[in-house]
Length: 112
Image (cartoon, rainbow, N blue to C red; front, side, top):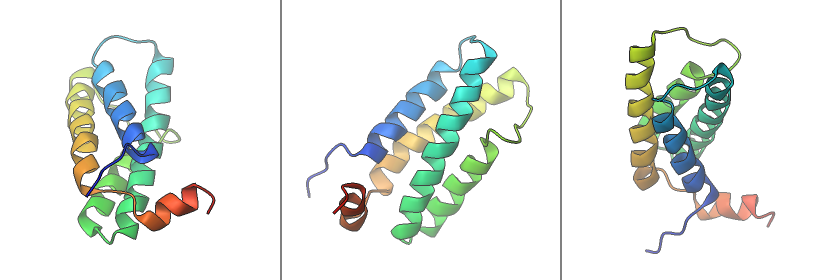
């Protein structure tokens, strides 16, 4: 079974890198962008998990999307966010192995 770098895989890797990079000090705008990216990637990956009927991954990633939503931000201290960012970054990387795009999803994304 061949695995190719898909858009969802690249997005999860990019989101994980942004989450790990968030451990350093940045302007508030970086964290706003991080919320948008993380929420979007988590929501799309939850959608992929739903299509694959992977209920556990769907719920887990759905909760991440809600937690990182940019509309009603969750306020936590810096140390707590650091632990959460690392955990979610690792979760995104692990999800690459377990939540794959189906051939149907790839065809729909290609406009076929």
